[in-house]
Image 1: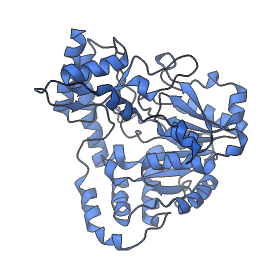
Image 2 (image 1 turned 135 degrees about the vertical axis):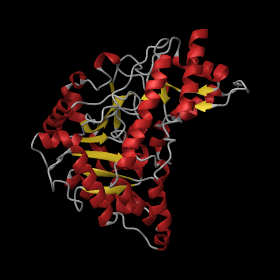
Image 3 (image 1 turned 90 degrees about the vertical axis):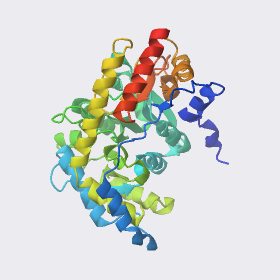
Image 4 (image 1 turned 45 degrees about the horizontal axis):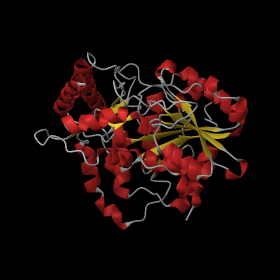
Length: 398
């Protein structure tokens, strides 16, 4: 077996299941799960119909690069959404379809990391655990950048020493952040691009939550947008990852794309022809129409706004909790240890949340997720309200 497999830690939900073992929640309260970031809103009916209409395509092998129409639809969306220069995203060279961002974020590290040079892979902390697993199985050492309230939940680039930058081959970003919802401003993205130039590393920006935000006239900026504003429409050293899972409530479709530096994508495509992750033809057909429509995306944001408004009204009087910049998570402080809070909430109110310490690692003297929980407001409005009321009752009982 690959010895690097022994370096992988249990996934957060494995730890959560162990934490809940032996606990009997009240039978008179239906279970409400706020732990998993799985969208529960209805997917667009026209996208589902497109899948059904194109089931005959299962008779053919799809190509790894995807249909030209899919690459054009995704590239057109990317250009419109982030105001990129016209024709700077060539669907033939600057974009590849992928089977969701999880698959691509992991595979990308395997393709670009040179394990012979004792590499570092940087990632925010707390983080999406795929970043750590991707680094370890690529033969790299993860190096975590703590994101705390003091630094507005953004990576502190000043805290990284020159020798760390010199060993860095890849840095993962997540903006809007999971679990914090923090959005990196353009100026910080541009500073990171200049650091990548200076020290020769790649920036992989996970932007799968970019379409869940509160102000319609202030969408979160993206890495390629920041690069273009610097006059760098070759997007050198920059790649972004986007998905239909959160944007369009289609987690089961497993459809997204990676875009940016054409030379990196040329080599990533070569890797992927061996990896074998071509999207099925019905998935490609459905993805085309999903990327071409914004009406359902705006309606999705409206649903999340209503839930955040209602839940924050209930919880802010009793918890240290703030509206995030974007995304669908809340990241409140807990009045007791986050694991005790999670176990007690499940035991007394049959509500499941995720301890923040399970999403973080001890780094530079602290675990930045300790003393917080992640609450995913993915259920319907009435269920989120019921969950918030139960959380409030639990807090008031402590």
